[in-house]
Length: 113
Length: 152
Image (tube, rainbow over all chains, first blue to last red):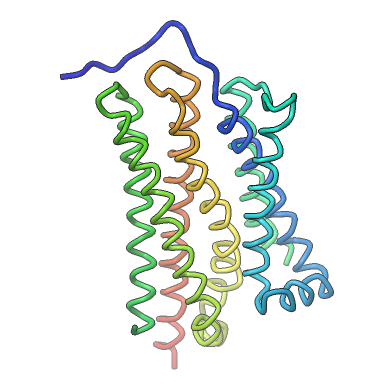
């Protein structure tokens, strides 16, 4: 049976992992901000409905587009070498972003709407 | 296809996403050259089934849910739409993107890099947690329809 490997030398994270990890955290927050904005602004809600026929479809497309654009964009910074972050930094960014986004969405519908 | 079967297909894909992310989490804890390819394939499968669940749910939500929503809002569990559905429909966007990120993170050198392993463990754990929330919220929404119909 193969034994799990625990190496002393640690390879850095790939450019794509860092870039899309950070993009995920940012998009998690932006997703929540868009929820609050469209619920509070009838004009924005109407525009989102008019764009695709349903506000949720527009919302999904916007979040996906932001995630992809941010991820691909962050891969190209530093002359194409991408962001330099430790695993802890990436994890803090994605967990923090998703947790804050989830708290904002659930808190808004629980208290604010 | 019957729209109720479509809804069950959505739940089935969601459960596969949850179980797949659990598989990735456990396999990554014991990663070695022999299971690295499997971790990457299961990670890709998690993203695939989550996209399947999402697209089916999106179609169902846009086309069929307005009728259920009207029933729920007339019943005693209006909160199952006002809080649970409203929250779920936006939280699953984060779940979709996290599941999409999982195969990207799993492409790292999980055998040699503790950093890459940590990111995959956290990501698969987040997919599990968010999928569990989505599943539980879905159950409450279904009960919202049921109690509204029973009340009339």
